[in-house]
Image (cartoon, rainbow, N blue to C red):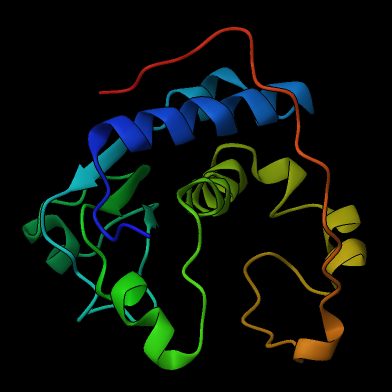
Length: 157
């Protein structure tokens, strides 16, 4: 498995995930316009388990490091991905990373559906912004069948 991510692999993964979001009715113009930036420098030593990052509103330090609001960042090389086997973990796929970060973006772009949603609280047992830790046993993972590939592609630079 390669540990270095390229712009081409990000484009392919992003096109696939955008197709999935479209297929389930979650793709909106605001979500589509969230920039995805491939970083040359891994901030992994600064952020544990960093494989991707959605920045809603950067801190002063974040701005000094070049982070801009409402942007997804993916490192070319991730220390977290490289060290995962040593921790007994499997690195997340690039598609999973983008799905996760786009989920954060969705919560920011559509707060009425996530951050202020009673249905979200009932489904997940807490508000989106709560720092409530869940026991591993609380999580139910069900494999889902893959969605068909989108007929149209989308490129991001």
